[in-house]
Amino acid sequence: RGPMSAVFTGARTAARPGTSGRSLASPARPARFSRTARPAPNPTHASPGEEANDVIVEWDVVVFRDGDGLSVGKVESVRASDGMCVCQPLFQEEETGVWLEATYTRGPKTVPLGDITAILDADFAQRMAPDRVSNPHGEHAEDFWEILAELPDGVRRGE
Image (cartoon, rainbow, N blue to C red; front, side, top):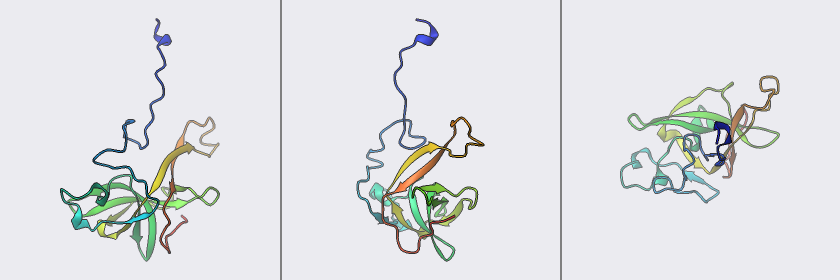
């Protein structure tokens, strides 16, 4: 066979960026089946031997205190050493109801782990970036989340 006649083995997919197609249901990260918002853990509960669901990890979708109100955001990183995490705020798109990153209007926020009020059940996906001027051939994608949990009252939904 020539180099172009290799057998097609199928597309490699991942549920989350960086997972390399491995199953997310593992002893370290059990699958979530409930469609509710879980209360965020007390930062002092992140000790060895605690249940994995009691720990905030990267890519969790959370509700956090943002100034005078509450915002929804994706956890970018967790710094257990100083009890802080970096959250990228999300906003709800009016037409579809999905949540997108507010990267152009609201930058990442560094918040104390104690300001995380809930961890939300949410589905992650990607879609073709709709801007046909900067994406004329449809090769660029944008991340979005469908939040399955009911949000607490007073959560900021717009940019």
